[in-house]
Image (cartoon, rainbow, N blue to C red; front, side, top):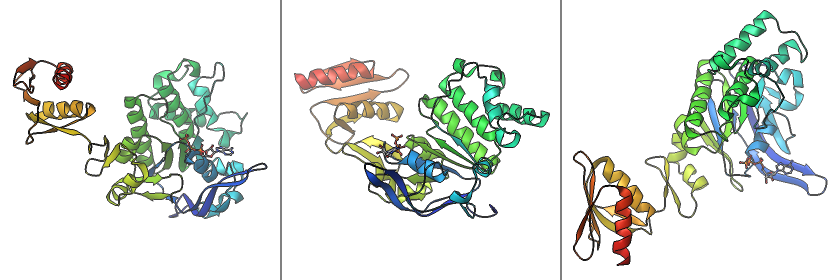
Length: 342
Ligand SMILES: Nc1ncnc2c1ncn2[C@@H]1O[C@H](COP(=O)(O)OP(=O)(O)OP(=O)(O)O)[C@@H](O)[C@H]1O
Protein backbone atom coordinates (compact mmCIF):
# COMPACT_ATOMS: atom_id res chain seq x y z
CA UNK A 1 0.00 0.00 0.00
CA UNK A 2 1.19 3.52 -0.77
CA UNK A 3 0.42 6.73 1.11
CA UNK A 4 2.68 8.89 -1.06
CA UNK A 5 0.90 12.06 -2.18
CA UNK A 6 -2.48 10.38 -1.70
CA UNK A 7 -5.04 11.44 0.90
CA UNK A 8 -4.48 9.36 4.06
CA UNK A 9 -8.17 8.54 4.28
CA UNK A 10 -10.69 9.00 1.48
CA UNK A 11 -14.18 7.73 0.82
CA UNK A 12 -16.07 7.03 -2.38
CA UNK A 13 -19.87 7.21 -2.22
CA UNK A 14 -19.70 5.81 1.30
CA UNK A 15 -22.91 4.84 3.11
CA UNK A 16 -22.79 4.48 6.89
CA UNK A 17 -25.22 3.02 9.40
CA UNK A 18 -26.20 -0.25 11.02
CA UNK A 19 -27.54 -3.64 10.01
CA UNK A 20 -29.78 -5.09 12.63
CA UNK A 21 -31.61 -8.47 12.45
CA UNK A 22 -34.82 -6.84 13.75
CA UNK A 23 -34.73 -3.38 12.19
CA UNK A 24 -32.85 -4.35 9.02
CA UNK A 25 -30.58 -1.88 7.26
CA UNK A 26 -30.56 1.59 8.78
CA UNK A 27 -28.57 3.98 6.58
CA UNK A 28 -27.63 7.16 8.45
CA UNK A 29 -25.81 8.86 5.56
CA UNK A 30 -24.93 7.95 2.01
CA UNK A 31 -22.88 9.44 -0.84
CA UNK A 32 -20.13 10.53 1.54
CA UNK A 33 -17.05 11.72 -0.36
CA UNK A 34 -14.47 13.15 2.03
CA UNK A 35 -10.71 13.03 2.45
CA UNK A 36 -8.09 13.64 5.11
CA UNK A 37 -4.63 14.75 3.97
CA UNK A 38 -1.24 14.50 5.69
CA UNK A 39 -0.52 17.48 7.96
CA UNK A 40 -4.24 18.36 8.10
CA UNK A 41 -6.17 19.04 11.29
CA UNK A 42 -9.83 18.27 10.56
CA UNK A 43 -12.84 18.58 12.86
CA UNK A 44 -16.06 16.62 12.36
CA UNK A 45 -19.03 18.62 13.63
CA UNK A 46 -22.66 17.65 13.95
CA UNK A 47 -25.57 17.57 16.39
CA UNK A 48 -26.09 14.68 18.84
CA UNK A 49 -27.06 11.49 17.07
CA UNK A 50 -26.06 12.78 13.62
CA UNK A 51 -23.64 9.89 13.13
CA UNK A 52 -20.19 11.27 13.98
CA UNK A 53 -19.05 8.21 15.97
CA UNK A 54 -20.55 5.92 13.34
CA UNK A 55 -18.57 7.68 10.59
CA UNK A 56 -15.31 7.56 12.58
CA UNK A 57 -15.80 3.87 13.37
CA UNK A 58 -16.52 3.12 9.71
CA UNK A 59 -13.44 5.05 8.53
CA UNK A 60 -11.27 3.02 10.93
CA UNK A 61 -12.81 -0.25 9.75
CA UNK A 62 -14.42 -1.06 13.14
CA UNK A 63 -17.88 -1.34 11.58
CA UNK A 64 -18.63 -2.24 7.96
CA UNK A 65 -19.74 0.33 5.41
CA UNK A 66 -23.30 -0.14 4.16
CA UNK A 67 -22.18 0.95 0.69
CA UNK A 68 -19.30 2.56 -1.16
CA UNK A 69 -15.67 2.43 -0.02
CA UNK A 70 -13.18 3.71 2.52
CA UNK A 71 -9.58 3.92 1.33
CA UNK A 72 -6.48 4.20 3.47
CA UNK A 73 -3.97 5.52 0.96
CA UNK A 74 -4.79 3.48 -2.14
CA UNK A 75 -6.06 0.36 -0.32
CA UNK A 76 -9.67 -0.37 0.66
CA UNK A 77 -9.88 -0.46 4.46
CA UNK A 78 -11.46 -3.93 4.17
CA UNK A 79 -8.22 -5.30 2.70
CA UNK A 80 -5.99 -4.10 5.54
CA UNK A 81 -5.15 -6.45 8.43
CA UNK A 82 -5.59 -5.32 12.04
CA UNK A 83 -1.84 -5.40 12.53
CA UNK A 84 -1.22 -3.25 9.47
CA UNK A 85 -4.02 -0.90 10.55
CA UNK A 86 -2.43 -0.39 13.97
CA UNK A 87 0.61 1.08 12.20
CA UNK A 88 -1.54 3.38 10.07
CA UNK A 89 -4.23 4.82 12.36
CA UNK A 90 -4.25 5.44 16.10
CA UNK A 91 -7.71 5.76 17.52
CA UNK A 92 -8.64 7.61 20.70
CA UNK A 93 -12.15 6.82 21.84
CA UNK A 94 -14.12 8.39 24.67
CA UNK A 95 -14.39 5.26 26.81
CA UNK A 96 -12.83 5.67 30.22
CA UNK A 97 -9.87 3.48 31.09
CA UNK A 98 -10.18 2.33 34.67
CA UNK A 99 -7.46 -0.26 35.09
CA UNK A 100 -6.34 -0.31 38.73
CA UNK A 101 -2.79 0.97 39.25
CA UNK A 102 -2.15 1.59 35.57
CA UNK A 103 0.22 4.55 35.32
CA UNK A 104 0.64 7.08 32.54
CA UNK A 105 3.84 5.30 31.53
CA UNK A 106 2.00 1.92 31.35
CA UNK A 107 -0.84 3.36 29.28
CA UNK A 108 1.44 5.17 26.82
CA UNK A 109 3.61 2.02 26.52
CA UNK A 110 0.55 0.15 25.15
CA UNK A 111 0.89 2.39 22.11
CA UNK A 112 4.15 0.56 21.26
CA UNK A 113 2.38 -2.82 21.06
CA UNK A 114 2.16 -2.78 17.22
CA UNK A 115 5.97 -2.87 17.33
CA UNK A 116 6.65 -4.97 20.42
CA UNK A 117 3.59 -7.27 20.49
CA UNK A 118 1.03 -6.96 23.31
CA UNK A 119 3.16 -8.81 25.85
CA UNK A 120 6.34 -7.86 24.04
CA UNK A 121 9.40 -6.57 25.77
CA UNK A 122 10.04 -2.85 25.35
CA UNK A 123 13.57 -2.10 24.21
CA UNK A 124 15.40 1.01 25.41
CA UNK A 125 14.45 2.67 22.10
CA UNK A 126 10.73 2.08 22.90
CA UNK A 127 11.13 3.44 26.45
CA UNK A 128 12.77 6.56 24.99
CA UNK A 129 9.87 7.04 22.56
CA UNK A 130 7.32 6.64 25.39
CA UNK A 131 9.12 9.26 27.48
CA UNK A 132 9.34 11.61 24.49
CA UNK A 133 5.58 11.28 23.81
CA UNK A 134 4.77 11.94 27.47
CA UNK A 135 6.93 15.07 27.30
CA UNK A 136 5.34 16.16 23.99
CA UNK A 137 1.91 16.38 25.66
CA UNK A 138 3.34 18.14 28.71
CA UNK A 139 2.93 15.30 31.22
CA UNK A 140 6.61 14.93 32.26
CA UNK A 141 5.78 15.10 35.96
CA UNK A 142 2.99 12.52 35.66
CA UNK A 143 4.90 9.55 34.27
CA UNK A 144 4.39 7.33 37.33
CA UNK A 145 0.98 8.69 38.30
CA UNK A 146 -1.91 6.15 38.33
CA UNK A 147 -4.60 7.13 35.80
CA UNK A 148 -7.21 6.98 38.56
CA UNK A 149 -5.48 9.96 40.18
CA UNK A 150 -5.60 12.19 37.14
CA UNK A 151 -8.07 14.80 35.89
CA UNK A 152 -10.06 14.23 32.69
CA UNK A 153 -7.84 16.68 30.81
CA UNK A 154 -4.62 15.00 31.98
CA UNK A 155 -6.01 11.57 31.06
CA UNK A 156 -6.90 12.84 27.57
CA UNK A 157 -3.33 14.05 27.13
CA UNK A 158 -2.03 10.63 28.20
CA UNK A 159 -4.27 9.01 25.55
CA UNK A 160 -2.87 11.38 22.94
CA UNK A 161 0.67 10.44 24.02
CA UNK A 162 -0.32 6.78 23.55
CA UNK A 163 -1.51 7.64 20.02
CA UNK A 164 1.77 9.46 19.35
CA UNK A 165 4.05 6.54 20.28
CA UNK A 166 2.06 4.39 17.91
CA UNK A 167 3.81 6.49 15.22
CA UNK A 168 0.95 6.34 12.75
CA UNK A 169 0.48 8.85 9.94
CA UNK A 170 -3.07 9.51 11.17
CA UNK A 171 -4.88 9.89 14.47
CA UNK A 172 -8.67 9.69 14.85
CA UNK A 173 -10.27 10.93 18.07
CA UNK A 174 -13.92 10.69 19.12
CA UNK A 175 -14.87 13.77 21.15
CA UNK A 176 -11.54 14.24 22.94
CA UNK A 177 -12.68 17.54 24.43
CA UNK A 178 -15.87 16.18 26.05
CA UNK A 179 -15.86 16.71 29.85
CA UNK A 180 -13.07 19.33 29.70
CA UNK A 181 -13.34 22.94 30.83
CA UNK A 182 -12.85 25.70 28.24
CA UNK A 183 -9.13 26.42 28.88
CA UNK A 184 -8.37 22.66 28.74
CA UNK A 185 -10.38 22.31 25.52
CA UNK A 186 -8.40 25.13 23.92
CA UNK A 187 -5.13 23.64 25.17
CA UNK A 188 -5.97 20.18 23.80
CA UNK A 189 -7.11 21.47 20.40
CA UNK A 190 -3.95 23.58 20.15
CA UNK A 191 -1.82 20.57 21.02
CA UNK A 192 -3.48 18.40 18.36
CA UNK A 193 -3.23 21.12 15.73
CA UNK A 194 0.46 21.62 16.54
CA UNK A 195 1.12 17.88 16.32
CA UNK A 196 -0.58 17.58 12.95
CA UNK A 197 1.34 20.51 11.49
CA UNK A 198 4.76 19.82 13.01
CA UNK A 199 4.70 16.04 12.46
CA UNK A 200 2.74 16.09 9.20
CA UNK A 201 0.04 13.83 10.68
CA UNK A 202 -3.56 13.76 9.50
CA UNK A 203 -5.67 14.30 12.61
CA UNK A 204 -9.46 13.92 12.51
CA UNK A 205 -11.59 14.48 15.57
CA UNK A 206 -15.27 14.78 16.32
CA UNK A 207 -16.32 17.60 18.57
CA UNK A 208 -19.20 19.81 19.69
CA UNK A 209 -16.85 22.80 20.01
CA UNK A 210 -18.03 24.78 17.00
CA UNK A 211 -16.22 27.98 18.01
CA UNK A 212 -12.88 26.26 18.54
CA UNK A 213 -13.19 24.23 15.35
CA UNK A 214 -13.92 27.40 13.39
CA UNK A 215 -10.78 29.00 14.76
CA UNK A 216 -8.39 26.08 14.64
CA UNK A 217 -9.35 23.46 12.06
CA UNK A 218 -7.74 23.32 8.63
CA UNK A 219 -10.86 21.53 7.41
CA UNK A 220 -14.32 21.05 8.87
CA UNK A 221 -16.64 18.17 8.05
CA UNK A 222 -20.30 18.96 8.70
CA UNK A 223 -22.71 16.16 9.43
CA UNK A 224 -26.43 16.54 10.11
CA UNK A 225 -29.41 14.23 9.79
CA UNK A 226 -31.01 14.38 6.37
CA UNK A 227 -28.27 16.58 4.88
CA UNK A 228 -25.41 15.76 2.55
CA UNK A 229 -22.07 15.85 4.38
CA UNK A 230 -20.13 19.02 3.54
CA UNK A 231 -16.43 19.61 4.05
CA UNK A 232 -14.08 22.50 3.46
CA UNK A 233 -12.07 25.21 5.18
CA UNK A 234 -14.04 26.90 7.98
CA UNK A 235 -13.96 30.16 6.02
CA UNK A 236 -15.47 28.63 2.85
CA UNK A 237 -18.20 26.95 4.88
CA UNK A 238 -19.09 30.28 6.50
CA UNK A 239 -19.01 32.24 3.23
CA UNK A 240 -21.16 29.67 1.43
CA UNK A 241 -23.65 29.77 4.33
CA UNK A 242 -23.17 26.03 5.03
CA UNK A 243 -22.47 26.71 8.69
CA UNK A 244 -25.65 28.72 9.00
CA UNK A 245 -27.66 26.04 7.17
CA UNK A 246 -26.36 23.28 9.45
CA UNK A 247 -26.59 24.88 12.84
CA UNK A 248 -29.10 27.72 12.92
CA UNK A 249 -32.19 26.93 14.93
CA UNK A 250 -35.16 28.91 16.13
CA UNK A 251 -33.90 31.65 18.42
CA UNK A 252 -30.22 31.08 17.54
CA UNK A 253 -28.48 32.87 14.69
CA UNK A 254 -25.06 32.35 13.18
CA UNK A 255 -23.31 35.65 12.50
CA UNK A 256 -21.24 35.23 9.32
CA UNK A 257 -19.16 38.33 10.02
CA UNK A 258 -17.97 37.29 13.50
CA UNK A 259 -18.26 33.50 13.14
CA UNK A 260 -20.27 33.34 16.37
CA UNK A 261 -23.66 32.10 17.40
CA UNK A 262 -25.93 34.76 18.84
CA UNK A 263 -29.39 34.98 20.32
CA UNK A 264 -31.98 35.94 17.70
CA UNK A 265 -32.41 39.69 18.14
CA UNK A 266 -35.24 40.14 15.68
CA UNK A 267 -37.89 40.35 18.39
CA UNK A 268 -35.90 42.58 20.75
CA UNK A 269 -37.33 45.93 21.89
CA UNK A 270 -35.11 48.92 21.16
CA UNK A 271 -33.59 50.87 24.07
CA UNK A 272 -31.52 54.04 23.77
CA UNK A 273 -28.03 53.60 25.21
CA UNK A 274 -25.45 56.39 25.11
CA UNK A 275 -21.84 55.38 25.62
CA UNK A 276 -18.90 53.72 23.96
CA UNK A 277 -16.10 51.20 24.35
CA UNK A 278 -16.05 47.89 26.12
CA UNK A 279 -18.71 48.93 28.67
CA UNK A 280 -21.15 49.65 25.79
CA UNK A 281 -20.52 46.18 24.42
CA UNK A 282 -21.14 44.38 27.72
CA UNK A 283 -24.15 46.53 28.66
CA UNK A 284 -25.62 45.68 25.21
CA UNK A 285 -25.10 41.99 25.88
CA UNK A 286 -26.75 42.17 29.29
CA UNK A 287 -29.69 44.10 27.81
CA UNK A 288 -30.11 41.54 25.00
CA UNK A 289 -30.58 38.87 27.67
CA UNK A 290 -33.44 41.00 29.04
CA UNK A 291 -35.07 41.32 25.60
CA UNK A 292 -33.68 44.75 24.60
CA UNK A 293 -31.53 45.83 21.70
CA UNK A 294 -29.18 48.70 22.55
CA UNK A 295 -29.22 51.51 20.04
CA UNK A 296 -27.68 54.99 20.22
CA UNK A 297 -30.13 56.63 17.85
CA UNK A 298 -33.55 55.34 18.88
CA UNK A 299 -35.89 57.00 21.34
CA UNK A 300 -37.31 54.88 24.13
CA UNK A 301 -39.20 55.26 27.41
CA UNK A 302 -36.08 54.22 29.28
CA UNK A 303 -32.65 55.59 28.44
CA UNK A 304 -29.24 54.44 29.62
CA UNK A 305 -26.08 56.54 29.67
CA UNK A 306 -22.70 54.93 30.33
CA UNK A 307 -19.94 57.06 31.80
CA UNK A 308 -16.67 55.24 31.68
CA UNK A 309 -13.96 57.66 32.84
CA UNK A 310 -12.22 55.51 35.42
CA UNK A 311 -14.89 53.55 37.32
CA UNK A 312 -17.92 52.94 35.10
CA UNK A 313 -21.19 54.57 36.07
CA UNK A 314 -24.61 53.82 34.58
CA UNK A 315 -27.36 56.44 34.47
CA UNK A 316 -30.89 55.15 33.91
CA UNK A 317 -33.65 57.61 33.11
CA UNK A 318 -37.17 56.19 33.26
CA UNK A 319 -40.50 57.39 31.82
CA UNK A 320 -40.96 59.77 34.80
CA UNK A 321 -37.77 61.62 33.78
CA UNK A 322 -36.01 60.74 37.04
CA UNK A 323 -32.36 59.62 36.66
CA UNK A 324 -30.73 56.90 38.82
CA UNK A 325 -26.94 56.57 39.11
CA UNK A 326 -25.77 52.95 39.34
CA UNK A 327 -22.41 51.27 39.79
CA UNK A 328 -22.93 47.76 38.37
CA UNK A 329 -24.69 46.18 35.41
CA UNK A 330 -26.62 44.05 37.93
CA UNK A 331 -28.08 47.24 39.50
CA UNK A 332 -28.70 48.68 36.03
CA UNK A 333 -30.79 45.64 35.03
CA UNK A 334 -32.75 45.77 38.28
CA UNK A 335 -33.52 49.45 37.74
CA UNK A 336 -34.72 48.73 34.20
CA UNK A 337 -37.01 46.00 35.60
CA UNK A 338 -38.45 48.51 38.08
CA UNK A 339 -38.95 51.17 35.41
CA UNK A 340 -40.66 48.63 33.18
CA UNK A 341 -43.00 47.52 35.95
CA UNK A 342 -43.83 51.03 37.20
N1 LIG B 1 -24.85 -0.20 17.40
C1 LIG B 1 -25.86 0.54 16.91
N2 LIG B 1 -26.90 -0.06 16.30
C2 LIG B 1 -27.91 0.67 15.78
N3 LIG B 1 -27.98 2.03 15.83
C3 LIG B 1 -26.97 2.69 16.43
C4 LIG B 1 -25.85 1.97 17.01
N4 LIG B 1 -25.00 2.90 17.53
C5 LIG B 1 -25.56 4.12 17.30
N5 LIG B 1 -26.74 3.99 16.66
C6 LIG B 1 -27.63 5.08 16.21
O1 LIG B 1 -26.99 5.78 15.14
C7 LIG B 1 -27.26 7.18 15.25
C8 LIG B 1 -25.94 7.94 15.22
O2 LIG B 1 -25.20 7.65 16.41
P1 LIG B 1 -23.74 8.21 16.66
O3 LIG B 1 -23.30 7.70 17.98
O4 LIG B 1 -22.92 7.89 15.47
O5 LIG B 1 -24.02 9.79 16.70
P2 LIG B 1 -23.04 10.97 17.18
O6 LIG B 1 -23.18 12.05 16.14
O7 LIG B 1 -21.70 10.45 17.46
O8 LIG B 1 -23.80 11.43 18.50
P3 LIG B 1 -23.24 12.19 19.83
O9 LIG B 1 -22.87 13.59 19.42
O10 LIG B 1 -24.47 12.17 20.70
O11 LIG B 1 -22.10 11.38 20.37
C9 LIG B 1 -28.07 7.39 16.51
O12 LIG B 1 -29.41 7.53 16.15
C10 LIG B 1 -27.83 6.10 17.31
O13 LIG B 1 -28.96 5.79 18.09
